[in-house]
Structures are given as C-alpha cells and as structure tokens.
Image: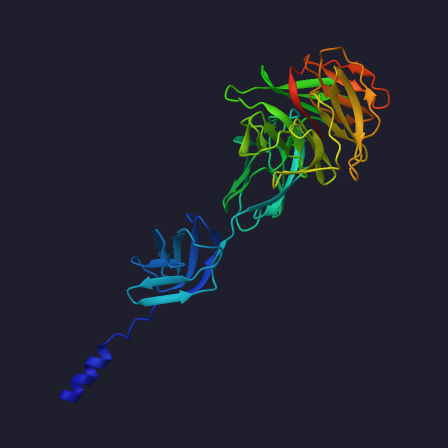
Length: 408
C-alpha cells in the first residue's frame, strides 16, 4: 500500500522548471552612456525578470513574452563586450558574447587647419571615428559654443560642416555629440586673418588690441580691445606651430590667448628684449641691457650672445629676417641705422642710414616680399628699402605699437 502511494505521488508531480536561456541581443550594441532599449531573445522570461549588463542592473526589464525581453541599458564602464545576466525565479542565464558597448566618437583632425575668420562659409572636414555605425544617429557640432546646423556625415570616420565666423587668431574648441557619446577637440583649427600673410601690430593702449595689415592689398582690420585686457607687449614672436608668444613690459613671457587677450601661464624672465624674430628653428633677439644680439630659447629663457660686438645705443631697436639675411635697426646720435648681422660670427655689416624724421623712432622690424616694415612712435607703419634705407609711410594707423609679427 505504501509503495502504491509513492507511485501515485510521483506520477502526479510536475517536472522541475528549467531556468531561462539567452540566445540573442538586438541590436548587439549600445552607447556607453546607456539609456537606449535593446531586445533580448531566449526563453523562460517572466514579470519578475531582472537583467544585469556588465555588472550593472538595467533600470527597466520588461518581458513582452516568455521569449522576448525589452531592456533599458545602464551606463557601461568601458567600450567592448559586456556580460549579460538574466535572473528569474527559476534560475539565471549568462552570456558574454552577445552584446557590446560602442566606443564614443573621437575627433582626430580637422582640415583645413586655417579658416578665414570673417568668411562664415568655409567648409571643413572632420575626421575621427564613431560618426555613422552602430546607431550613431545625427551629429550635433558646436564650435566655441555656436551650434552648426549643416553637418553631413560621409562615413563612420568623416563628416563635413560649414564653419561659423569667429575672432581672428582664435583656435576654437570643436565638440561633436551623437547617440554614441561626446567628443571634444581643443584648439581644433585657427581663424586666420586673411588669404595672404600680413603684419599684426599690437597696440600699447587704445581701443584696438591689435591691427592686421595686408601689405599686398593695403587693407587692414582692427581687433577690438576687451575691457579686461591690460597687457602691453614689448615684442611678439611666432613658434613652429604659428602660435604667437609675447613678452610684456613686466618681462613676463607667455603664449597669447586672443580670446581673452592675455598671456597663458606667463613666466618671469630676467632679460630685456625689445625685439625677437624667428629664423628657421632659432629665435634671434636684441637684449637691451647687454646691447647684444643673440639667440633666445623660449623653453629655457636662455639668451646666448652671438660674437662680441655691442649694438649702438640707444633705442629704435628692431630685428627681421628673410630666412637668410638678418637685419636690425638701432639709433645713435639721433640717426637710425639699418644693419645686418652674421649669425655664424656675430659680425655686423655696413650700416645704412634710414631716412626718417628726427624725433621719430622705430619699435620693431619685419621682412615681407622684398621690403622691411617698421611701426613708428608717431603711430604709423613704414616700409623700408633694405638697400637704400628709403622710407614710405603706409595707409594704416595701428596706434602706438611696440610689437609686430609677420603672420599667415
């Protein structure tokens, strides 16, 4: 009798429930920031099913049937495969190769790297990754806070957009946002002053921070001075990237931030430089205390004199080069002379008197297209024939400008 009862109970008992299974994730990817919905296919799903993705519980898991589960993705820790765990009252399923978090987009480069500041219609190509594939969606491009509305994705690694106009010489930050995340590139390109090289003159005071002069077109435009700008440069020079560095009247050296019109992380130096020019990989400088011409290393702030001669006293110092010849100006006994210096020996050439009205001095010197250019203390810009010293007053009024650089 007891045996018969056991047989009856065994016959009436239900088979043990099997745990859930996982066979597919659709889509098999999602953004690292989470928040999107994927569908899991398998079996054994129910109302109380929970899902973990990469060790984090999904904020919502809804079983639409015993074989389908809608899951809102939690944020991921890193791109790549993420383990999926499905938990039910009957057990669990674990799969590690059904789903991965997509990498956020990246910005590698922009071309061209120079865009004329005032054009407003220049098209730039942005290269990187994550622009199209794996549900990237429509991108939003922001240039220094200005939203671009015409971005066109051409592939997962390339897109194009029209650059809004911006302040001359500023290097803006470009930000890209899509469904895969955010990418940002600082100093992404440069707002150039024009289609040709020209002279940038920095005012000591007044309404203009600087004035750009195009010697070919004989045109100019001013960069208005910000109310917070109070720096006055004694000399300005370019580095190998085309960035401009300045030394102010307090002997501080720093890279010029045109957006804020100030120097970035300036450092104190001991030498007094009224004029510096880049020549190849070196910077050639006039040091006023020693009255010597030499090389200046902006990284170490070290000045090394060339040869032994001292430059004549007093003032009207400027220095320029065409890549081969180095010219400098100086004043003695009320006469401004133009001379050359041999960068190997430090020897000076034969001085050429400059035909300039008495009492007017030069502030700096640069070479462009066969002529030398010098801002003068009467708030004018002059061109100088390097062979004869003949001077021509140009149609621009940059104000009192102690510093000037040839820029592209």
